[in-house]
Length: 115
Length: 110
Image (cartoon, rainbow over all chains, first blue to last red; front, side, top):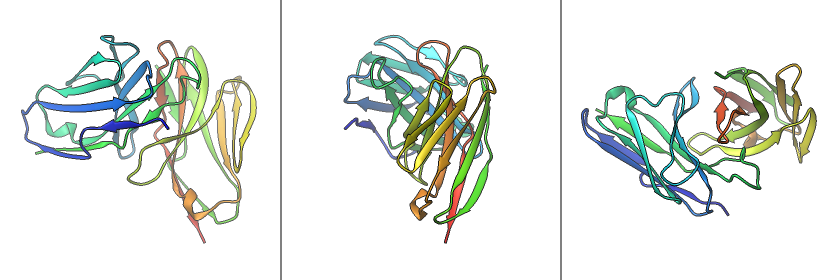
């Protein structure tokens, strides 16, 4: 079974803090993604990576950065957390080959509250 | 850019059939996926259509019309456990990028 794990289920941070969210997958997937999920807005792509040390901006990258030093690990960094970054953060991975790249496997999510 | 439209909420009776529609606008379209998400849970993959027509997987079927930029998810013999949010998602462009819709919350009632 594909397993995607995220470092925390719940996180409370203060405005201005630097926040690290970590994601690890164990299926040797090439692609990894970070989304945020807000009520009524669905899943919005923040950043994705298709290879080690490679990254691409998604639809809402402002205020975020990412790091992928190893294939299995993809980190999301909030350089200076703000209250509008309070959200559920979901990590996902997919393979370039079979199964189809469109099959994304999600982690359990990290619910971040910024005070 | 990409945009997807799906109804925000649908209510259906246990044992019935429900269809959740999705229309999309995108360039470089590859295919349409569907995901299920229970409250408090992670999205899980249900189906994928790259070609026109119907794909069936047990009680769930998914349909795609590329010419109409339209697809739907059909759930048959509804069960209470099918109460969840359902997201359509388009694959387009390069790098296996997937864009999700805003989701349809399905409530199954007795």
